[in-house]
Amino acid sequence: MWNYAYIGQDEWSTSLGHAGLSKLFCWDLNFLGALTNCTQLQSLNVGFNKLGGQLPASIANLSTQLNELSLYGNLISGSIPPGIGTLVSQQTLYVSENLLTGKLPPSLGELSKLRKVSLYSNGLSGEIPSSLGNITWLTYLYMFNNSFEGSIPSSLGRCSYLLDLNLGYNKLNGSIPVGHGPYNS
Image (cartoon, rainbow, N blue to C red; front, side, top):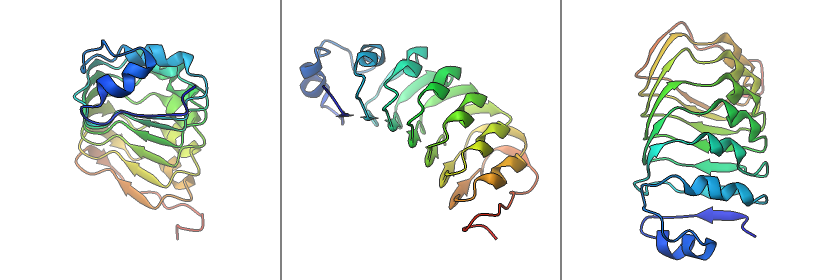
């Protein structure tokens, strides 16, 4: 049973071959559906592998033990599915440097264990959901170089452990809210 799956560049046939997934093309995201049977999977890192295609909704069916999902630096398109909120153990979500579009689902704010969120350099748009303020343990939030618009949600002030916030290169207005936690003053 897998607890961690790290697939680096050019490691597809070796690492995924042990899971019976060696006949995939490296741009095929269908393997994510096969990983839903890995109920103890805690970390999935497939960054910089030239993966492409639509981000499948089945990503929401990955293990509830999953605490790291790293899909950064690929060619993944589509939107982040609303079911992402079911990944209740998530501490790290890295989907930066892809081709993702659409609005962020408010269910992202249900992931109360999140510490690091990296969504930069995509085509994400719409308003930043105020529900992100529910992630009070959030320490890093990188959302720069997208097409977010509207006001910066004041609810981000509830993220009292936020150390690094980058919202640049969007169409946002308003001020960055200041929280009342140990790192904000």
